[in-house]
Amino acid sequence: MLVPYSTDAPIYHWPIATVSLIVANIVLFFGLLSGSFGPWDNWMLQYGNGLHPDQWFRAMFTHAGVEHLVGNMLFLWVFGLVVEGKLGWWKFLCCYVGIGATQSMLEQAVMLGYSGEVPGSVGASAAIFGLMAMATVWAPMNEISFAWIIYYFWAHTIEISIAVLAAVYTGIELLMLTLTGGAGGSSWLHLAGFALGFPLGVVLLKRGVVDCEGWDLFHVWSGDYGSFKKEPEPAEVFAKVEERRQRRDQHLLADARKQFQAFLKDGNADAALKLYEKMKGVGGGFTLEGDELVAVIQTMHAAKRWRASAPYMAEFIARFSERADAMRIKLAQICVVELGRPGKALDLLAEVDATLLPQQHAQLVTCIMAKAHAMQEEGIVELEVETW
Image (cartoon, rainbow, N blue to C red):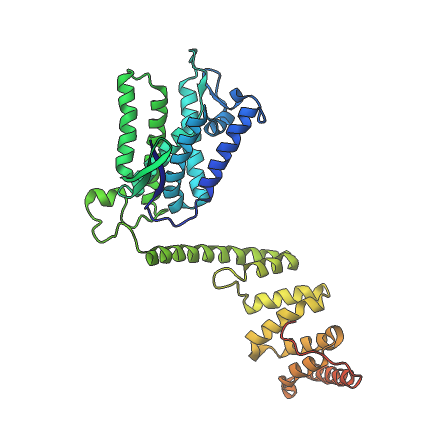
């Protein structure tokens, strides 16, 4: 018995959705077996009983037996590795569910007038054949590794290219249809999944949604793939992953800035600051522009949140030192009134040229300095700390 277990196709995303789908299928199988999820018939794609969109989705998570389940999950694993590895989890999930549900819809529509003995169908095979078709478009010469198991012992391993594997399995289905005179129902379903997945793979490739490094079906067919290595060096794979991560981070930061500005416009400083702190570690970091920092500080001051505003005022002073005298004066005032840090207030005011200030601001500086000196004379001692 041949058991597929891995692939040499370059993988740029962890198989999060693939593993989740396998777990969901196993849980639902045993849940239906025990009756925990209701009657098994309710999860079947029923024939001759109208169109039922809920069944289009549920049927692909239902299996007729352990062998049916195990066989489908093994191939979901290896083809999921290839397809999700190039698409990422959510795009992969959309493709998988889209292929399965579309095939089920077409199948139920074709069987509307059916009144035979077969009540319906179950299984993920059509969606998995769709994944095999997509993998054939994107990585026909990459290989699937199979364990050759004899009497439950791992005897040998062999590698079969995805194109050969797709040809063998679609060939078997076509042969079954020929031998049965077109009566092989499951073969039609499998081929329908393949027929849905193939054009989807082509569209995603041509629109640049996936990068196949020149090893897609069209480059291979034309012979224009000689400058590409079949198995990229680890450094090349890591570089590609890093490039994708940076693009993702740039999109996240751009979206975060729009949302941040929307929060500020609505006067929701708390939400804006939570978003800011959350995005600091993304990519090169979410850095606020000067006017954005001022808007944050003004919003916090309007709510009399003096202490909370101090770190952002300090950040503005550090980054925009040449135009920060007004901010220094205000932060010095907060230091003596709210924070009990007279020494820090004096340090801030030492950087202010009082001769260039309007009279009102100069008087305020004098008052803050007097208060700070008085606090020090009263014995208020502050620790040297860098944070606010």
